[in-house]
Amino acid sequence: MAGADSTRSMLVRLDSLGNSVWTDLLDMGTSWGSCLYGVIQLDDGSFMAAGGNASDADGYAKPFLLRTTSDGHLIESPNVPSARPQSIVLKDCYPNPFNSSTRLSFDLPSAENVTLTLFDLAGRNVATLAQGNYTAGVHSVLFNAHDLASGTYFYRLQAGDFRDTRKMILLR
Image (cartoon, rainbow, N blue to C red; front, side):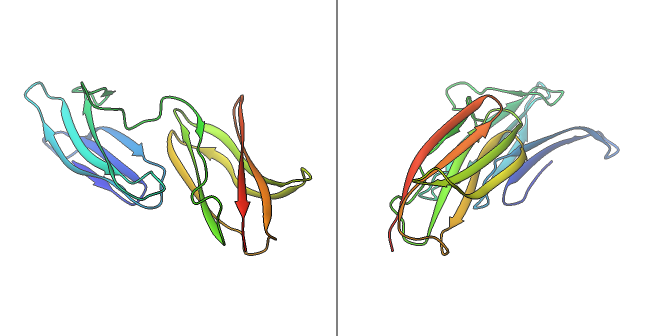
């Protein structure tokens, strides 16, 4: 059985009485759409699931293929990239330069306590864009700069021991 909302897909294995045997929540981390398109059970009791994840700034779906063991553990499928990030990555915002809003994205291979902060050229903290515990996956934050003046800003991701800073330009 599979289900999805705009940010998560779920695989659930039920026994013959309809009781849950195992559940795996796949947090794709984006508010613009990801889901499982189909799930099949293979002869060995494992499952194969196909889906799409619109995690790029261009909004085009990236297909993925997942396979589980019969007890619900995710395994890599041959010749198919993993749907889960392999390392923490802070991506360039898109668009950049931007007029009023831009999207900032980051990847987490495991759950982390995250802070995404915006600074001006003088190093002053202008805004906290994201803060808290985030699950493994691709995450995206839409930033609306309606209260800020034109100029160069920096955004910094802190996740565990990881730190990275990128530049963005606001043009009015």
